[in-house]
Image (tube, rainbow, N blue to C red; front, side):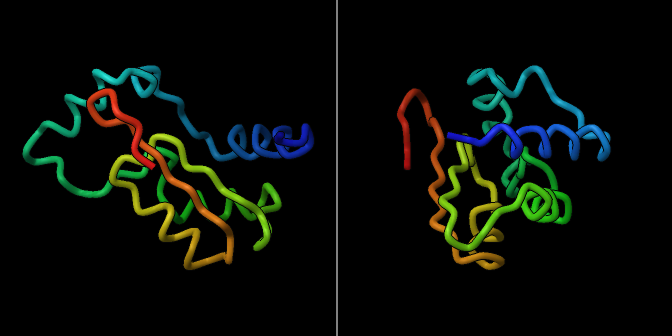
Amino acid sequence: MVEEHVLARAADYLKKSGARLFCDYHSMAYWDSRYAAAEDKHPFDWYGDQSVTIPFLLHCGIKDAHRVLIPGCGNSLLSIAISNQFTCNVTSCKVLSGHLMI
Protein backbone atom coordinates (compact mmCIF):
# COMPACT_ATOMS: atom_id res chain seq x y z
CA MET A 1 0.00 0.00 0.00
CA VAL A 2 1.28 3.45 -0.91
CA GLU A 3 1.77 5.71 2.07
CA GLU A 4 -0.26 8.93 2.04
CA HIS A 5 2.78 11.21 2.28
CA VAL A 6 4.24 9.62 -0.87
CA LEU A 7 1.03 10.35 -2.79
CA ALA A 8 1.02 13.93 -1.49
CA ARG A 9 4.63 14.45 -2.62
CA ALA A 10 3.85 12.92 -6.00
CA ALA A 11 0.83 15.19 -6.50
CA ASP A 12 2.88 18.23 -5.47
CA TYR A 13 5.63 17.32 -7.93
CA LEU A 14 3.18 16.83 -10.80
CA LYS A 15 1.56 20.21 -10.12
CA LYS A 16 4.94 21.98 -10.09
CA SER A 17 6.18 20.20 -13.24
CA GLY A 18 3.08 21.11 -15.26
CA ALA A 19 2.51 17.46 -16.24
CA ARG A 20 -0.60 16.80 -18.29
CA LEU A 21 -2.88 13.80 -18.08
CA PHE A 22 -4.37 12.33 -21.25
CA CYS A 23 -7.86 10.88 -21.00
CA ASP A 24 -7.42 8.35 -23.83
CA TYR A 25 -4.54 6.55 -22.10
CA HIS A 26 -7.00 4.36 -20.17
CA SER A 27 -8.52 2.95 -23.37
CA MET A 28 -7.19 -0.32 -24.80
CA ALA A 29 -8.50 0.77 -28.21
CA TYR A 30 -6.25 3.86 -28.05
CA TRP A 31 -3.15 1.75 -27.41
CA ASP A 32 -4.09 -0.90 -29.99
CA SER A 33 -4.42 1.76 -32.69
CA ARG A 34 -1.32 3.64 -31.52
CA TYR A 35 0.96 0.60 -31.75
CA ALA A 36 -0.65 -0.65 -34.97
CA ALA A 37 0.74 2.36 -36.84
CA ALA A 38 3.80 1.24 -38.82
CA GLU A 39 5.71 4.48 -38.18
CA ASP A 40 5.27 4.20 -34.41
CA LYS A 41 7.70 1.40 -33.50
CA HIS A 42 9.93 3.49 -31.23
CA PRO A 43 9.86 3.02 -27.44
CA PHE A 44 7.30 5.21 -25.72
CA ASP A 45 7.28 6.19 -22.04
CA TRP A 46 3.78 7.37 -21.25
CA TYR A 47 4.85 8.23 -17.70
CA GLY A 48 7.09 10.86 -19.25
CA ASP A 49 10.65 11.24 -20.42
CA GLN A 50 13.20 9.53 -18.18
CA SER A 51 14.86 12.90 -17.53
CA VAL A 52 11.63 13.77 -15.67
CA THR A 53 10.59 10.33 -14.40
CA ILE A 54 13.81 9.42 -12.56
CA PRO A 55 13.95 12.77 -10.67
CA PHE A 56 10.25 12.28 -9.89
CA LEU A 57 10.98 8.87 -8.35
CA LEU A 58 13.83 10.37 -6.33
CA HIS A 59 11.51 13.16 -5.17
CA CYS A 60 8.98 10.53 -4.03
CA GLY A 61 11.67 8.81 -1.98
CA ILE A 62 12.41 5.67 -4.01
CA LYS A 63 15.03 3.48 -2.35
CA ASP A 64 17.11 0.61 -3.67
CA ALA A 65 15.15 -1.92 -1.59
CA HIS A 66 11.75 -0.86 -2.99
CA ARG A 67 9.66 -2.92 -5.38
CA VAL A 68 8.44 -1.06 -8.46
CA LEU A 69 5.44 -1.99 -10.61
CA ILE A 70 5.15 -0.50 -14.09
CA PRO A 71 1.59 -1.18 -15.27
CA GLY A 72 0.92 -0.78 -18.97
CA CYS A 73 4.62 -0.74 -19.86
CA GLY A 74 4.06 -1.23 -23.59
CA ASN A 75 7.45 -0.85 -25.25
CA SER A 76 8.75 1.59 -22.63
CA LEU A 77 12.40 1.62 -21.59
CA LEU A 78 11.55 2.92 -18.10
CA SER A 79 12.08 -0.48 -16.43
CA ILE A 80 15.62 -0.59 -17.80
CA ALA A 81 16.31 2.99 -16.70
CA ILE A 82 15.10 2.26 -13.16
CA SER A 83 17.16 -0.94 -13.03
CA ASN A 84 20.23 1.01 -14.18
CA GLN A 85 19.70 3.75 -11.58
CA PHE A 86 18.55 1.67 -8.58
CA THR A 87 18.81 -1.90 -7.34
CA CYS A 88 15.02 -2.23 -7.14
CA ASN A 89 12.89 -5.23 -7.99
CA VAL A 90 11.07 -3.95 -11.11
CA THR A 91 8.00 -5.71 -12.52
CA SER A 92 6.52 -4.53 -15.82
CA CYS A 93 3.23 -5.69 -17.28
CA LYS A 94 1.16 -4.87 -20.32
CA VAL A 95 -2.07 -5.96 -21.95
CA LEU A 96 -1.82 -7.13 -25.54
CA SER A 97 -5.02 -8.04 -27.35
CA GLY A 98 -6.74 -8.88 -24.07
CA HIS A 99 -3.84 -10.93 -22.63
CA LEU A 100 -1.86 -9.84 -19.59
CA MET A 101 1.90 -10.12 -20.13
CA ILE A 102 4.33 -9.86 -17.20
